[in-house]
Image (cartoon, rainbow, N blue to C red; front, side):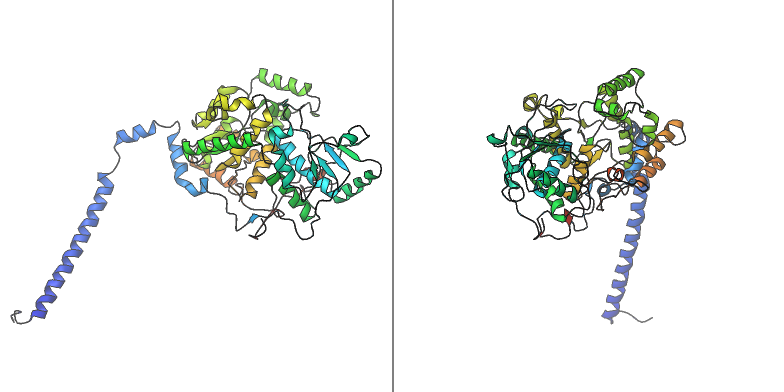
Length: 502
């Protein structure tokens, strides 16, 4: 055999080959050892698993659901697909003209019914070439709130923001206070032709008084500039008073510093709503009777006899606190989630709210966030405290309404306008079917149930879409009542792709 000493290049080749072989063997050994540690060395002990299982009431379900749902799918904003607010007037928009014709208004309903109604009246005044007098607010509704316009809204900001669109004054001129007025109950969901016809009243009257302001304008088929004017009024001009804005923003900051992110839950499980809708599922006989008596004694509620079961099966009842808890858990939200309750007093009090707290103990209210001194100026003013709820709901990471009332629609529309922030709109009719199957034992809580809930709501989380039209088969003016509200979804008139049209 030949000696390799005289061939230094062979010696280098052999040492290099041995070195490569050594590295390969070491790599294989390290990989095998890692697998061994993964399978045996770091496996949790049985005692640890038992400790973990005692943390939650239903840990197996919660953990399996959370593993299936990503953080982005729970908390991320809905994709806006490049859409932006666009409320600037077009080149065809007519500027405000000085007018000696005046419209006075008595706004009706709760806070958000009044807000959207006032926005309609701004547009109506523009169409009729009239001066709008600052509206009077409803003091006779369920809340018995004595607040004036300037108590809730920034009056000067409202006037100046819209000065190029409509002339607005704080009060009628003294010389016009005693003259005869045309008192009108304007027809709901009316279009341009109706108000152009109403303008003929100026031949005989200098002042028109409007008895109700809500839903006075059509949702659809209005000129683009009129629709954008409604958005400018609602989203820009109707700013809350400085004291409300200040405290609202402070409460949002406290929520964020406490938990980083939170769900705003409009839990419309309140006495007036349950009585109005006739929803008594889960209530005692005494509670059901109390709600029936309240409905009988409320004159402006036209429907007195209501079948509670039919209401619930049809999806017309607000979700109960227990149902909301199951719903949010099934979507994948963990028990540590902070939930702000944006509502008034829950019917049944803490006992009924505990059915939600058992799944989500981090329940927060205005009273918990603010000091008694901070809330004192708003005491006995339901519309002002509702404004605080509105601010906190708009700024939340996720908004969930338990019923589709005026606040739910207004908040959803505003969140769409601000970039399609995540808003989960429960399919109450579909959920009731699932809840009834849970109660009968046909279904059980777990990953399969959660999958059904998640599939049911994958397209109900605030993503961009055009407004729904009237329900099929309904004719005449009745179809207008079934349309999706303009203020619930102001797309496409006030939301578009142009970045320069804000």
